[in-house]
Length: 321
Image (cartoon, rainbow, N blue to C red; front, side, top):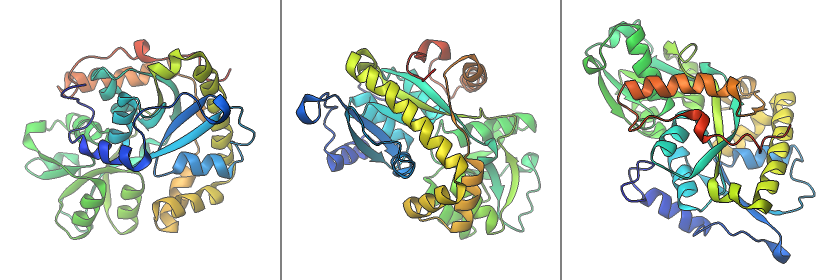
């Protein structure tokens, strides 16, 4: 797709695709069996599923494709290099707005405390209203869940977004700049937020009451249209649910996986494992309603290029009954 809105620098995807040999999804595996290429971020889905024993006795073949973030993963889905993509709600919506051929096949509940606007220890900034005239760094890009939190928090505090200097940095770069005292305020998420708070950062506003409580799992339309792959996707979702139940029941073991795969401090991993106990949920009205609210508000902010009707980009037939 020319002029893709999915990724500002397509080289990121192309390098990742070359590294994994992902020119396009192969429909068949060993002995002519159906094969799925499952997208992943930082190997977390794969590691969790393997630890839970959720991948035993597969009646089809799978190949894992790991990416460093949602943007290159969704670009891979758009390019036909992966069949599934687990990502945040807004990255998936932005991909749909850019006409990527995808459908939402499941969601995952997560804590909206895992998104926050933070300031360094000792900062004179005491609340969101104090951000007027300040520079705020957002991780990781325009259209991210952190970007949405910042815009909505500014509205809540009656601060015009033009009164704030908003910049965008990748999380690792932003974390280093924040630790060095070069960032006045930072809208971030997950392990980056937790690590900064443990080091003394102060939280101004988290995502409670603003962000939707769902991450999403998207599947390519081509995989959904293939009867054999569609059946395999149903089975994969049931196995992913088993893995999610295992992670919820074994937070210490899941924290160990987080440490291994992301290299975070064990204290950070323990907090993440405690917060990320959400099971997979069907893409039904309970998911669509809060997600549509986010879409509508983000579109009104001028940050979404076209309006998206969430009900039009779900496929309810994959999630296990």
